[in-house]
Image 1 (cartoon, rainbow, N blue to C red):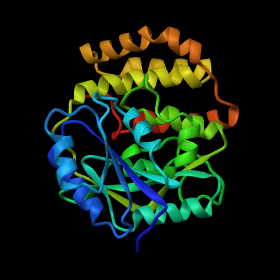
Image 2 (spheres, rainbow, N blue to C red):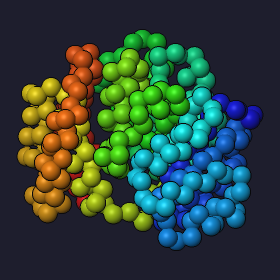
Image 3 (cartoon, rainbow, N blue to C red):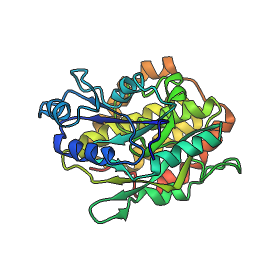
Amino acid sequence: MTDPRTTVVVITHNRRDELLRTLGRLAALPERPPVIVTDNGSTDGTAEAVARLHPEVTLLTPGRNLGAVGRNLAARRVRTPYMAFCDDDSWWEPGSPAYGADLLDRYERLVAVTARIVVEPDGREDPIVAELRHSPVRGPDWLPGPALGSFLAAATVLRTDAFLAAGGFSERLWLGGEEELLATDLATQGWWLAYVEDMTVHHAPSPARDPTLRRVHGLRNTLWFCWLRRPVLPALRRTWELARTVPRDRASLRAFGLALAGLPWVLRERRVVPPAVEARLGALAEAQRTSTARRYVG
């Protein structure tokens, strides 16, 4: 069941063992997709291990940690119409990349399909899945699943050309909620995103992560996104909601400080979305306020 339509793109940083496990899983997929790995400046022998154990993988070594922009680097090397993003501690279930490609073949205004995420080793659904499944965003009847306002880069198949035309992930945002800005820009161009129940990604969360830094970047990027794309009143409401609810600690203070420091850039690059796209973003307000899966803690 080889399938020439989709390339798997992975970014990694100092997670050699997790990445090697993921590459083993990807190599066993019946679709036999090409795989491109961007090693974001690892110092644990990741690049050497990949070159030795998985010579079939295209390995990119920019020499520094590019964050999500490492996916941009890989996307420029993709020669298939679709990409399946994957993290170094996650892997696609057999058949899912091909099913995602089938849907993108079928629906010409569908730009990305996000899969159900199963957390290993116990096989439970990630809490975010319920929010995807019950997305309040209204979409056209032809969508193959609930319409989404954004996507999860570790569990999404999307169109290569559309990703590149939209500019990929922002260098400024680096990593942490970086998908929201790109998804909104794609929506502004007329694309739709959907959650698809019949696709699955497995995630075995790596212990090699800094939850506090992830929170700082996620909060900063959320604030930047609001003021880059949303009208003034919704941006003010979201900013106030975050200021009122996030932990009152150094990490939150740092995130707000970084967001404020970037204000000149944000105002220079600000492009308010059209009303139809703002309606999608506004529909997510209540879900964002009550989410237990996406909280700025850690």
